[in-house]
Length: 149
Image (cartoon, rainbow, N blue to C red):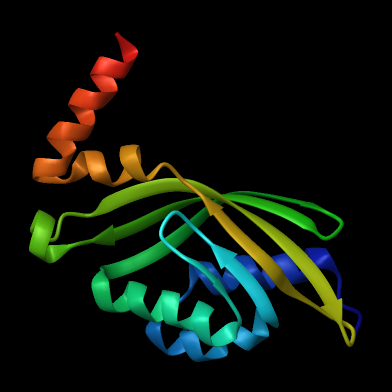
């Protein structure tokens, strides 16, 4: 079997678009053992820590899922844009929310298989999340308005 960064990104996209709670235990198929993960709320390294981030996502949110909208692969550097859909029943009555963001992946080949060594998510927590919360949202929208005037 000949693997490539393009084939690896196909696996990564498929993995995330079909991610279910039971799949968290399969992170070693996607990530290197020492992989780094960073988003606006987390900065962790290693498979157990990355698996914990995604396990917590399934515990805290209802029906979380990713829709990959764009992907670009250039050697071991990969970039995807995505929509993250979820609900927070205790906060929004189960209404589906969407966060739009992007991820930079750095792939590394080990023993003929390409996996994710670096996963860095970029999204605006203020606009995509905080502004949608009842009390915090009003404050964030006010601050944004004041900053733009």
